Structures are given as structure tokens and as C-alpha cells.
Length: 263
Image (tube, rainbow, N blue to C red; front, side, top):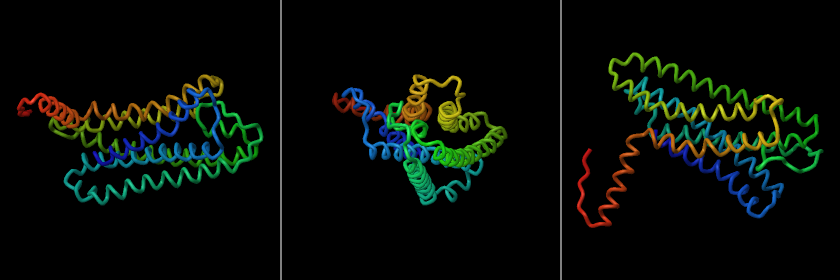
């Protein structure tokens, strides 16, 4: 679990670093300019981090399934080699998806100017600048992307149905509480990730406006990566204990006071 959390943290850091630093720099210099190559790189990196993160969340649901439903086989099914292979597959799928999507998007001719009404290069805003027939081609690719996303979401749902069935059969209340507390952070992160994406891309056109689109873009691009570490750090007791011990050791060492830690 901690190995996949490390991957998730790196992806969150990369995701939020793709959009916000450029937006902050433009705000400080009172400009909205970005080069064509910079826009393409921003789209590629954002798609890569988002798609790889969703893949890692899908793999983490399988990790929770094996840990709770098949604990005796956890070491054989999810050893260090298997974890590394699944993480590599998640990162590799993100690279492939981002490469294909970026190449398809920037192969479209821009027929309606070059001003994007957003604080970063967002694909729906780029598509508004393209020609009508080219827009339909990209829309087909977006439908394919939605199909892949729905497949990952279905896998997560099936995994948690099996997990909840196994947890409800546990005779020990302490065991049920431990299992639920282990799965709860992942469920919250997945729910936040999917709900933000659905609201951003499937909201009714009747309520769409430039200010609302800007606010929604900030929410789905910045809030989940910033909140995910907080969710996991609050829920994982071992991490809290480790941080507390480190601070105590540093404090007492600086004050030359011997300390003995006990639970």
C-alpha cells in the first residue's frame, strides 16, 4: 500500500505542478501568453499525470481486494516484483494515452483564433478553436477515453463489492473497523477524483459560463492533488505515529533531554 501511495503522491505533485506554476507566473507578470510548444507540453503532462493517477487508483483497489479478501495469498500475488510491474503499467498507459490524445488534439487546424478562455491549456477550450469537422474526430476519441475510464471505474466498483461482502462476514468488530479504515481513504480519493471529472465535463451546457468553467477547472485540476495527501495522512495511524516520533526525537535531541518512546 505504501508503495502505491508513493506513486500516487508523485503523480499528484506532477499534476499540480503542470498547471499552477505557469498560471501564477502569468498572474505575476500580468500576461496570458504561452507558446504553442508550451501549450502542447502542458496538455501532454496534464493528461499523463491524470490518466496515470486513475490507473494507480485502479491498481490500489486490487491491492485492497487482495489484502482483505485473500490475505494469505497477498505475498505471492502482490510481491515487490508484481507491484513494480503494475506501477510501471500504470505509468506506461498514462504516457501512451497522453501521447495519442495530445497528438490527435494538436493535429487539428485552429480556425477560430488562438485565445483560450482558461488559465491553462484545457482540451475542451482548444477544441472550441478548431474546425467543425475536426472537432467531431476529437469528440470520437473523447468517447473512447470515456469508455476506458468507465472500464477502470467498473473494476473499482467490482473490487469494492467483493471487499464489502468479505468485511461483513468478518466475526470480529475490530477486524471490520480496521478493514473499513484501510479502504476509506482510497474510496474518498476515488469519489473526489471521479465526481470532479464528471462535473467538469458532463455539466449541462445551460449552466456553463466562463467564470464557472474557470472555477471548475481550478477545482478538478488543483483540489484533488492537494487534498489526497491530507486524506491519507489523517487516516493512516502508523504514519501519524511515525511523524510524531520523529518530531519528539528532534525536539528532545535539540534540548539534550533523553527520551524513551512507548505506545
